[in-house]
Length: 179
Image (tube, rainbow, N blue to C red; front, side, top):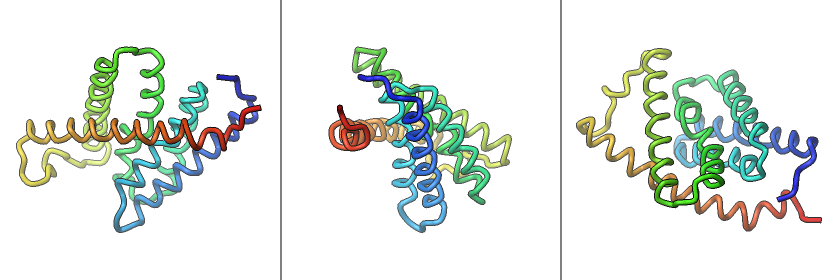
């Protein structure tokens, strides 16, 4: 993997911020497809992490979070991105580089998602007064809701992997042509 010029890193970071904010805005205004928009918004930061520019990836996540918070009126709808989805791609790229065992890597993904979902739930409660335990769908007990969330995280990681491979094989060469 070759080293990118600083100007190209900044340009990619700016593109990621603008596309991420656009997808987050779409998630709040579209009547359907909210989950798809959140998912797509979470993919953009991964591209920076894959290129090994973790500093720009973290700055892009922070900048897109701040811009979304300033521009989007429905703050509660941004919690999934702030708490988990926005930085999952950074963790995933880092874990793939440093954890060789697939099972341990997968368990680390689930643990990461669980911890940051809990952080998001606590933040929603204390900052916005939103009690997630009162809003568990279908009247499920908490343990069943946790199992459903873990299954959802597993599916999220699997679909993320498919999109990640698509980026690596198809999109990357168009964005960063080889010399």
